[in-house]
Length: 106
Image (tube, rainbow, N blue to C red):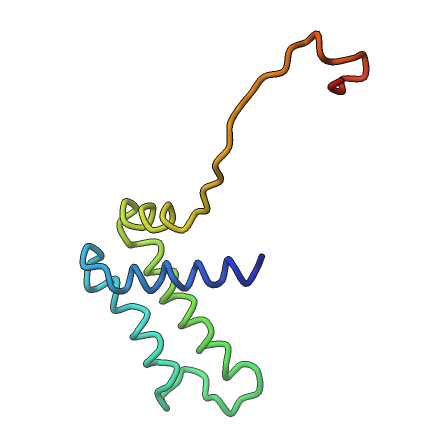
């Protein structure tokens, strides 16, 4: 389940990054975060154990959040709707006469 959600989230991010309806300044947030991660200039140097990587993780998370929260809701909802699985079926009601006292169908 986690892997499926991760893959669908990555697809959503990619579609938002390539959609011209999303303003450029929103689309550039994630690439800027990635540039920060690979650049040698950091707020917390990478040679500090654990804390050196925390600012890199925060930069990526903030870049993704900017993209997902500030992108037009109409565009995000369209792509989320496209990712959902559609299950075809039919609806029926059972008559009360067909149920016994325990509530089970006969």
